[in-house]
Image (cartoon, rainbow, N blue to C red):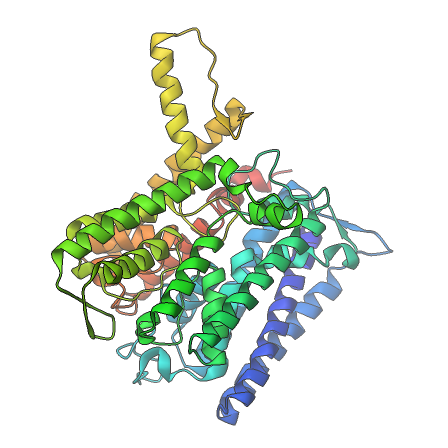
Length: 514
């Protein structure tokens, strides 16, 4: 493996990260943050950018030799790139808000992996022994913006963003970077264009267009421009960080809630389908895709059943702000649709504490935490395409019990999938469930908690959901956990965001052998 190439690519990513910190400086100035916080953010940006530039300079190609990224370099760059993002991305949290190292790493990991789980509340003990009296709302605007920006950057992937300009920096062979970063099961029809850089540009243009459109709608719905931008960042990236302690419930506005529901759903759909629908004017392509149809039916069924349960059980619904709202069918539909879509898309916004809802709804939400959204989206979870393939493979094996000499024939959108793809899907699900149970078993050993809390904390971090059940529900944070538990969950978030293989392959001893 060419370590020079890996160091060079990671240094470029660190440089991008430093430039991104500088974007928060004018935001702090415009929002009248105290000068101390603005200068601290600028200092973090300067240090990060300087180290990135120095690393890129000393690892550049020598004598005009072009750096190449192969299979191992691609996996190593993504793995170490995310590690660097967690370290440098945590600097503003430690310097400005005085978070402890474990808390800053957890918050940064949650942001970049678009998980949306947080440790920040009014009870969190800081390094100086103090507390944030108003929780998230105690943070300066520049840090709140950084908190939302890392979600947006992590959504489509820092590496994918870097691919837009890597060809101009003398780095070739970036296909492996793209394959290691873009989540989901890949088939022959997944790549948008023959050139990886062109695909990355198209993805980011769609990502940006959706962000701008939602920002405008939220601003028209009554949010301030700052809140509209931050919530759009976290909706399109399915991240779930909010600038308010009560999340979206702070805005008692049905229009805002429905806008976010729509954009959460769109962000959990395969971006390749959206691009093909717009560029090729093939508006029915969504309904020709088996995964999208499966995802749509899953969401509609979960929303419908949750609405009926909510409507039949409560005369009024209590929001996250403690406000009671008379329960009608439309109110139940709005609350159920928001929470179901928020969970299945792994966004993690909340309008109510669903832990107080009927057990049937809680079980539906817990099941949806495993499934997640579509491949090729910013959503987490196992992904609908894998769940669909598992079902088809199971039917195929049952059929072979009757016709033992038949050839397995599992198809997706008419394309017959090779046995290697099926085996990789089975291995992925096996590893996914294994890591889920391993993290759930370790958590009670590192920090005292209930079984329900351990199970939901494990799956909500691996699937990049955000809120879980019981002691990690939408009304509380992860701040009460021990430092070791936070490090473990940070690792779970990253390995879930990179879909297991990218990080696990780097841990194999054979990966480092010649």
